[in-house]
Amino acid sequence: QVQLVESGGGLVQPGGSLRLSCAASGTIFEIYDMSWYRQAPGKQRELVAQIPSGGSTNDAPSVKGRFTISRDNAKNTVYLQMNSLKSEDTAVYYCNARRLQLGVLYNYWGQGTQVTVSS
Image (tube, rainbow, N blue to C red; front, top):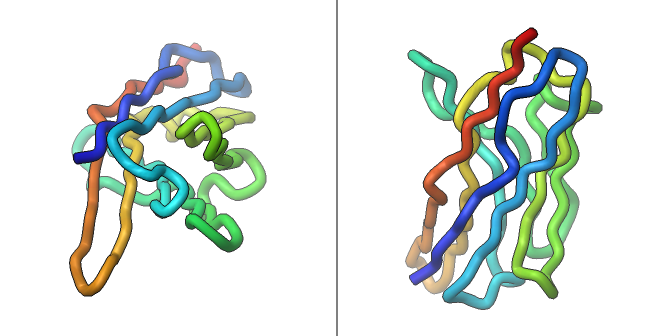
């Protein structure tokens, strides 16, 4: 079983920055593809950024150039650096760990952290 714990959310003014962290336990972290998703009120959960266990990162068009996903396998942690925040970035942000092994999908979610962008 994989446990994911997000932190770093909060209230920030438009144009500000936040860094989210997601600490993983209970698994071999480096073999999982890690992602950040978000869900705004009344909207579906959407992919923000992903960083595979090997390979290049992928960002949603709405955050490209503003958000950066990274991972530290030694610390079992994935980060989301968010700059130039906009009101439309307001959402609950979720960490996801995913691995497909021998046809079995292992898919885990954190509890989410609230990000509110408002003046």
